[in-house]
Image (tube, rainbow over all chains, first blue to last red; front, side, top):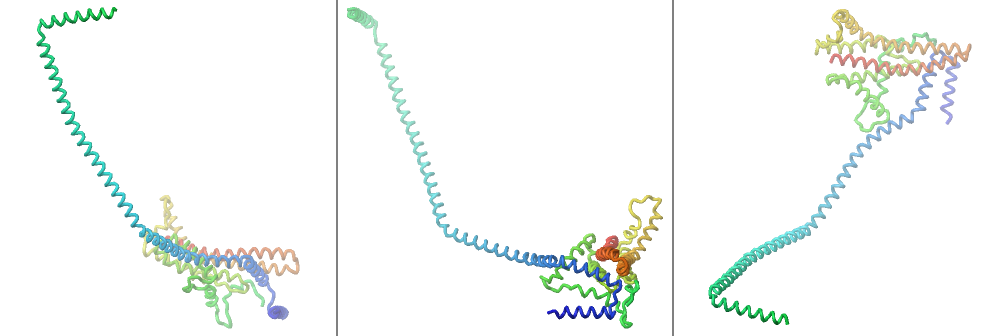
Length: 180
Length: 227
């Protein structure tokens, strides 16, 4: 494996010793530019290659990202669809509950209205009862007053004197019994 | 072979066949063109990573019509960059050291920007000859000065590129000659000179890249004014 190096060295020495290649000022210039080039390549070569690879990687990664995003999108869409299907199954329960709800509301409303009707009728009947009671009361009062008026009118002066004398006798008797 | 300092600037010839065409077109072989792959190899990736921001930078100040120039400006950048960098290798011929080539590049492109401006918007193009807000007394003088500066642009572009590269190459040759001759006489000075040579080489690499960019940048600026 030292063949190429032997060939290179031999060729170089041949060219130099036979003055086929003359060392002149251009040689020094060549040495300097070649050293600059070799230094740059040795120092930055790997970095530049990695950079170029990174550029390509980013390009591919961007496209892959688009693809993966689309796949994720579709996955979420599938899951959402499945959830919707499960929801459809539960729909009958939902409707039953709603139906029950509505029936309860109707019942409550009916009961309330029934109560209102009862209350109203009772109010009317109470009024009638009160009216009758009042009428009877008034009749009673009027009759009592008429009777009293007539009685008072019929008391003659004679009877008045007799009753007053009797009262006085009773009082005297009572006072006697009280003192004793 | 014994080289004088100016042999590197002679047009290459092999057995009487001028090789100038090959030396001008060879750098394009080193740049892979993009085939229809999505993920390219490292060289193509790096190349597009490098050229896309440059093109974007050049095309941002231009309006939509100016974007027609994107291809020629980008390829001009790449050509000049490759030619300049390859010229730093030993025993190579750099076509951009020839004034003829640089004039051939600068003059038609500049003239194209000028004619585009004069043809499509002559008032605005001529209006560039007088900067805004100049006092009335200076107007005639300033117009003459601006016209001169306008007409000298292609010459400036070409000569700038030629002079920078020629001077750089000559300096490299001179300093390396000094280092070679001083090596048997005063080895320490020789080593010092070699250090200077190394630094100069790094400078020349930078100059090569910058000059290519500056050339194209100025052309795009002239284009901005006129399109």
